[in-house]
Amino acid sequence: MILSLAQAKIEKMKETGADNLHIVSDFDRTLSTDKVDGVRQPTSFGHLSDEKYLGEYYTSESKRLFDIYHPIEIDLNISLEEKTKHMDIWWRLILDLLIETGLTKQIIEDILQAQPIHLRGDSKQFFHILENNNIPLLILSAGLGDIFTTHLKQKELITNNVHIISNLFDFDTGGKATKVKYPPIHTTNKNESGIMNSPYSANVEARDNVIVIGDMIEDLRMVEGLQHNTVLSIGFLNDPDSESRAKYHTAFDIVFEDEGALTPVNEIIQDIISK
Image 1 (cartoon, rainbow, N blue to C red):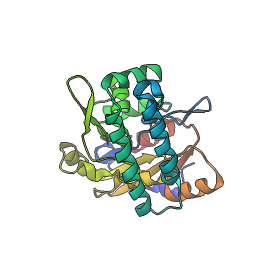
Image 2: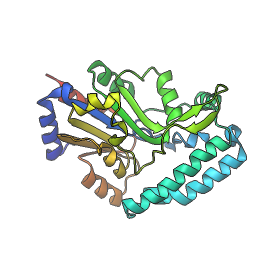
Image 3: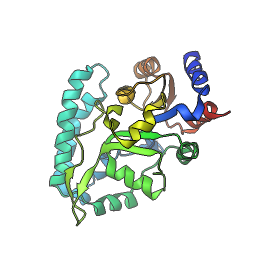
């Protein structure tokens, strides 16, 4: 059910339609599904947890870091400033660990062949609607960008309107990761300021209506960095309980629970751009 405030934003966006709209979305557990047949799916980082890829040391050390920092990441009662300090440490440690233990392009391809990423239902339609109407999509992800970008390329979903800011590596001629392309992107520092002064930014700056889509309250910060006229926020609440439900419905304009497809998101976009 779309509440009156959200509907008012949709009606305002309809006045200028597709030409004034862009989308900013998280990837893990937002465009990708949280569970398949009740089984929680790995994030883009989680795909590397099997020690056959990077060895026992990576598996044990990454789990140790996860056990320390993930509870902090999902704690709704920790301040953003304090949480950001911990996330900075965690991401730098895990990205360095991936290089140290020998991440390669071949490993990424092997992972995706053995355990493909599952996108939410109607994801292809989501990408096609945006492409066909020339609506920019910015995927802002704190995940391992080389894994989900490879998957999206395999599905032919990376089109000219799609831009990605994530944790990406430089690889040598042998396909081995040598360094991180950009400063670490994590759950509390990802926002649109990362596209400033890029060719993409000029296109987006001319579109001051934005739909922001995420599965964590911190994802609302993704649209910080650029000026917007109307911001419509859509949240996916993957593990609802009374506390999180109340906080999500306060934070987001629209909330979808559990393993929802992107169907209602597509319907909202179609409503906005319909003449």
